[in-house]
Amino acid sequence: MQAAIAISASQWTSSKAMRGAAVQQSVAAAVPRARRCAVVASAAVATKTLKIGTRGSPLALAQAYLTRDLLKSAFPELEEEGALEIIIIKTTGDKILNQPLSDIGGKGLFTKEIDDALLDCRIDIAVHSMKDVPTYLPAGTVLPCNLPREDVRDVFISAKYKSMDELPEGAVVGSASLRRQAQILAKYPTLQVVNFRGNVQTRLRKLEEGACDATLLALAGLKRLDMADKVTSILSIEEMLPAVAQGAIGIACREGDDRSAAALAALNHEETRLAVVCERAFLAALDGSCRTPIAGWARNENGQLAFSGLVSTPDGKKVYQTTRAGALTEDVAREIGKDAGEQLKAEAKKDGTVFDW
Image (cartoon, rainbow, N blue to C red):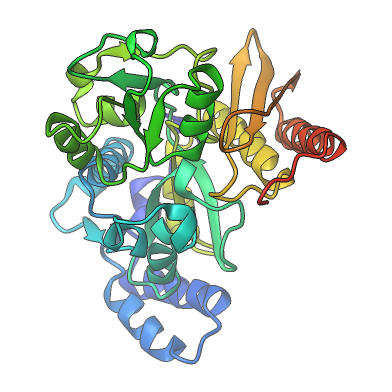
């Protein structure tokens, strides 16, 4: 916790009138919409409660509860009844589960409705799995906070086999991730990979019912759900490079909302934030969509920022990889990611590989 930038109880609990005016001013700056009057009125009423917006999946709720508990630890006054409220928001991505994300609009489908709620002042902060957040942010919002990152690795889960190496030819692996699909097929071209969407519990139930022989999930999510016991084996980074921002939780607020920004500053883990900046710059340079298998991982290695990136064709037949290293600063992190993405894009183009960017 960064105590040096935590705000005091007196700053947090200033008069209702002052807090109401501050919220109205931030809304006026961040929400230039016709319904602003109604939004300001509702925000003024809600000034006593910090509202945390989240999806309703078990994993999303676990991340929202973690955020709530960290806020309470940083600001004892937020332990008072009614000081914090978790608001569940149903997203389009949660409603449509029978189609691949690439066919229905991509990962932004998990954040759009939450972004709208933030801009409408129905919530004050938004908790996201960073790998679901598009590389652009809606005007009027900022994402200044990343919580300490969980383990970035993927895991193999199967009731029949102990590892990927044990899967026989023709075995069926369920995964909704093109990144995972491509890396599986690059190493095990005789396997079948089928679309496999739903929350963690749904996927594990489908696996138990025999929908596939094995599946791959993020270790971070299983650990946050206290379900690490479901893991058959953990894949090494060499076996499966993680998704951009995998294992990272990001928390957004409205631009100009000093109250929320000060709270999030106390929770931010700067090393994680810099790694995420690097990885998202890589993704942005590739103009990556849910139709392109992309993986990227930045981390602190002996005080230096190290980065590994990958882009592949969906069938895994052509894989382009690169690495970078540099200082642990925001400017360098962004430049490393951008440069790595531009390199792989140029290599693919020179090679005649066509991606659905």
